[in-house]
Length: 154
Image 1: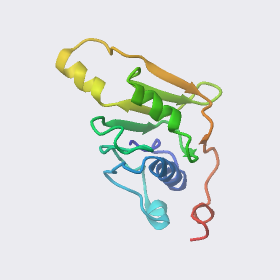
Image 2 (image 1 turned 90 degrees about the vertical axis):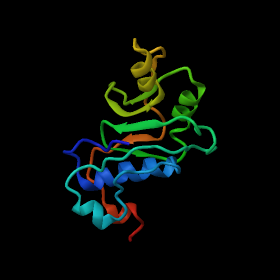
Image 3 (image 1 turned 135 degrees about the vertical axis):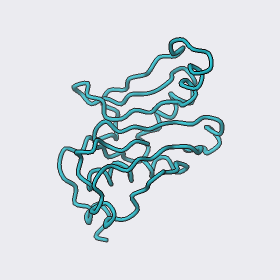
Image 4 (image 1 turned 90 degrees about the horizontal axis):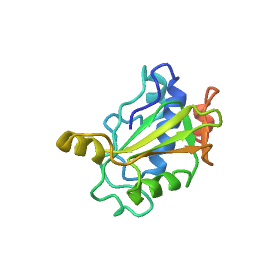
């Protein structure tokens, strides 16, 4: 995963990363934000990558690596990424863009297999990138987040 842009506050970064990690339990981060204090001290977004299987059935992506990139700070509600996982699992697309109502990209999820194929064989991507507009349960965070409230008063 690549965190939200650097101009995004630490609180919104924390919620973005935390909510995606909750949906992708097999994800492994390169540099995780693990506590509210760490998030408050963060000066930029955490760089993370997904390099383990994940999803409702942890065996579904046992040979596929995915990359998640935030274009905007978002909150992902439980189950919201299921259509994205299903689309990538189908093998009929190389990636998925999640867009808001005005067409702004919020989140990208891409298979790492296509770039590897292109390096080895060259040429253009063989599969399209799917665009999902106003995906239910994916909310752009336009306001500052109260981390204490988000974490349940912790």
